[in-house]
Image (cartoon, rainbow, N blue to C red; front, side, top):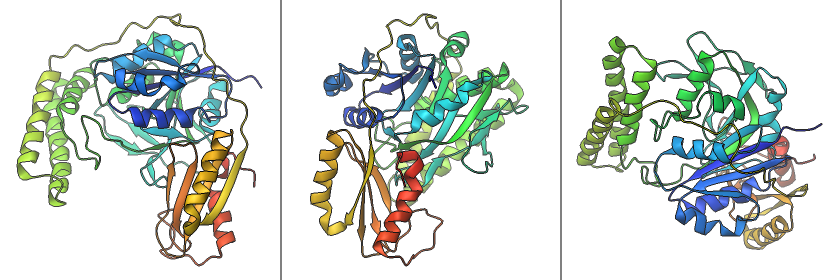
Length: 408
């Protein structure tokens, strides 16, 4: 079967190490044909110079994710444009699953599932969103993709770190609204897609791992440094999607939600009372600016700026290395060597404990799962699981086999 050509757009700013890790994972994705378009600042461009012969690198210095994505779309030459954040890594089967629903011509957008920092729990699954920006879960059964037509006043929600849209649809809708410099940018697009009647597919098996890396807006422990852009985006969002009479009450709810979030950080010792007051002031200042900020779409060239540059990655075999934690140093070296040789490597390291399991993608190019032989992987599992080493390894391999392309 011939797959539609896909352009993967990555926007990066102030996170060169995370960007390198993301690209290392992207180049292991088993899909053809696809290209990678990286829109990044000078620090990012310097860090990824070694990838230059395999990807498109587009300079961009402004702190506006919507403008950066639109620039990426302008350079994208694929029929479909996929998006992933620079602090995320896709499973090797990501595009295979994410793009499959595009065989149906009425499907304009696709969204996958996102695993969080521990690499196992889901940060985001299936949701819908309404014109107030409020999301609610959609119960999906099984792991098959589900195509959703516009749901009355609600739209199918996709996350910017794991979504794809037909390029011609993005051009017709004038891409992402630059009024959303950060936050609510994809939510606005979701609502506009629904307004004109496009269907969206939600795809459980299209998985990425998202780390919430530090940025100028967020500390490594996820504590916000500034809320100005969030406030500004809410101001723009209200003007686009809400009637005047509902905006004041809605803004009070947003303020209350953000204050509760900050107070939780304060109670845990991550913020001081003065920090809470300062951050709330930045939220209000952003909201005031959002009342007058220019909004609307951007002009994206119907013909891409540059020709399609396919990733030239040969098919990779997926292998599993299993061992005890005391063997970690040697097995990590083996995993790195085999990843460099062109294999998709999953390393499982177990200790004789009940420690919870964590999964991470090592910058050297392999997946590593660590935890106790008797500990939880899925957080809904029993607190302690009695199992022999080989059986437990087999259970963990089966849990990720489809996404990791492991033959069992």
